[in-house]
Length: 374
Image (cartoon, rainbow, N blue to C red; front, side):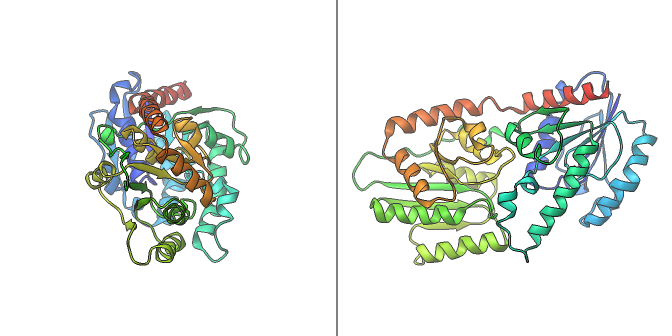
């Protein structure tokens, strides 16, 4: 049996981590699958492991130009799959135009299906039209595929508003345990204590960093607590502008808000070690891998009550509406003011994070691919 993997759109960090996760646990690959062909940009292939059963393939069509990729998917890939006698094609992205069957498609991006999120974009923003086009492409791809893999129950629910979902599996991400042995700072019980809050996420319109900045400012005013916030992650466009404007409005003297761009893992690890509390204020996540990584550290988390996030962290957090500043304030203050609660959600979140492993995700993925082939 031969499996093809179309990873032509897998260029982001999360997409590459997913490929590493399912390929890296190759001992779970079903014995009857003798050969796996993987197509991806050369920049992606260099980051993936080598195995005797895995043939990594790139082509000039898989460069930076999206139209060339789409042409390759639509016209060339189906013919290549037939020539290689592939039994099944695994699409790692729902943006595929390849018509080859049977196929299994992994849905990693649910933004095009979230009306409330898309409505936040202005009519002149490219992101609005990009997501509307992606919605059309995703629907066509998911209707054409034999089996859909969702990362969460929420992803399946929101997709069902556009696509009749029949054959599917829910297979969550695993996660890199790099941060799991971190020792974060404990909040002091002494007078005049200070608190370092951390939010790791790139600036996007649904990440609500500006609301978190406003909430930290309100805590300092309302409760006279010396709390500081560090936001780690890159970004661009309207979301980055809103975040910078909020920072200038509430902390123009640079006393308690620090905006950092993209950081490597070893530097983010130090940020966790120097923090007392983690805040995650996203309104839309197909899964929420950043939240899961924070859970693995055991740091107390104040979390958005939107999208798939409650499904992941369950009751091991204090929830808030990420678009309501006062709710963010209240959630943070509940954690700050209750040592018993801090310990409870800290231990609970760390224990729950252990349920999400690449070992399990890889096994379920290969089993699904094999069953669809039969």
